[in-house]
Image (cartoon, rainbow, N blue to C red; front, side, top):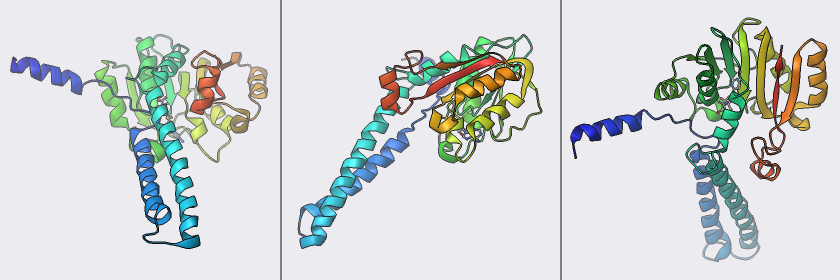
Length: 278
Ligand SMILES: C[S@@+](CC[C@H](N)C(=O)[O-])C[C@H]1O[C@@H](n2cnc3c(N)ncnc32)[C@H](O)[C@@H]1O
């Protein structure tokens, strides 16, 4: 084989985008390791009388036996989630959700949009592709639970791999965004606010809407269950009363992005898209 063709093929492979996974492989592998450890302890301390005898052995058998089963269940669930979200898998649910949300991001020529909690840049890049005459900014804290998988560098590499130049990425916390009031023509976000513990979710939405220009549009997708967000219908009403237009809460777990049953087993029940115009 011609060495040039080998080199160019590997170059292409290196330059492919990799958006990673909301449920990283390391999470499932960590759980698999825990399952194995619990099973070994079950065998050594509970199933045989090599080390322990009598009541202590019985307690260990119950403890490590039950622990093994629980961890095995979570390992299988994590692996199934990983496969379902995978950009290269069969279901490609993450891609369906990203593309569906990006479809609502409408930017005027020369305008700028913001993607809050951009992760690996998937939604920022998808929205930039749909609005080639505008620019998208992606911001994230790139720390905490997703530190090992998402980064600014990953976002930039993904944009480069996709040949998208109308994007930039910067550090920014959704709790207090580092942007002036009314500085973007559109704001978007996907599955971010439910991760921010100890903060009122509707307050986080208002912080995102703070940086949206009057007349600008928003499309925010998250797990907007009553338990997390409180009464979202009242929130929609309050926005309308403040002069926001065409505000709608779209249930995306009714077949729009995923089916009701699928959302339930994936832990995505309550998925909804808040759209409208300021
Ligand atoms: C489930 S991931 C979703 C990533 C991306 N929006 C997507 O759809 O692929 C959640 C993201 O929220 C980010 N995040 C969590 N807390 C944040 C905060 N306070 N401010 C900004 N981003 C945050 C995480 O770093 C992570 O990238």
